[in-house]
Image (cartoon, protein in one colour):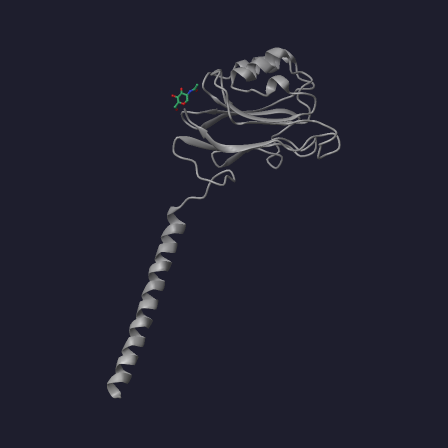
Length: 209
Ligand SMILES: *[C@@H]1O[C@H](CO)[C@@H](O)[C@H](O)[C@H]1NC(C)=O
């Protein structure tokens, strides 16, 4: 009888010790996980690899809420930062160094066509270009201006119409078609806001080369 009770007690102790040990091990694993696993940047669902940059670009909502351009985990232009404006909001990044070279608003209503074109043509070959529309961007959008964006890899700029929302990420003067582009068509039947279409948005891991 005594030996049975002893056996039972020691078995209980072993189980207790094992549970305690396991809980320590699992808490250590959890801790090391939360330390070593980085969170995806720019609100993406997945992590980008070392040869990609996380990007997330949203157009304006009607002519009320400004667009947002996130590059490599940092919001470069937004309504909240108060550095966006009606027209085309453009961030230029040196893709080799990952440094932001400029953020500009091109006024597509009151701006001069030749100034807009000059600004676009000054973007050096290979530079990364992130573009978000805010309000109508077609009033001053000449064929030459559309061609400049086609040269950066845009497919949709050629058919962009009055009050369409547009977001695009490409490369200066490469001619390679970009997969990072969305258009939200202004159509009274599908518009979210009365006279404006839904926000256009593009997000993902942009290749460095
Ligand atoms: C981009 O950055 C690299 C590395 O810092 C530099 O060598 C290069 O000159 C830069 N390119 C441009 C066009 O400024």
